[in-house]
Length: 167
Image (cartoon, rainbow, N blue to C red):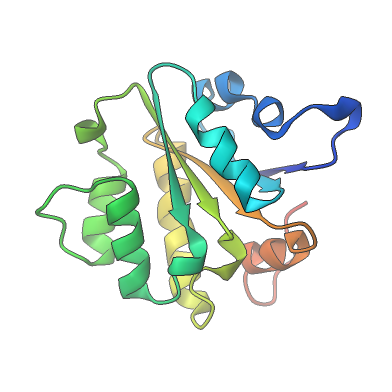
């Protein structure tokens, strides 16, 4: 999994929306997840700036403390169809076919990504695997957010137990 990190203190005073580089990000297939380190309120300001043809949604990672809550949060944020089955297989099906959004591209910005599924490294790894596959398949782009000072925590979780964190 490739991760590109962006922080809230970039040179030249560019704002968070500029650093996400929307057009480059949503038009490149398989370019890896982005990690944005900034205040959550900055994310709230950036999402409405997505370019035309792009649906950008916020998934609140702090609400994803269990598998059930994670599936519910994603279903609400991306407005999954009513037949969504509240399990990982159904999640994978929905995340790989976002046709009901009627958009050229979809971007999920996960705030407080380091707080998702805190008691289950296995469930977190499965979620990241599903999201990576969806992104690599072109169905979805993923931006992982963490607050300043939490980047190392997120990278450690992304690496998984006993592995080296991505740079």
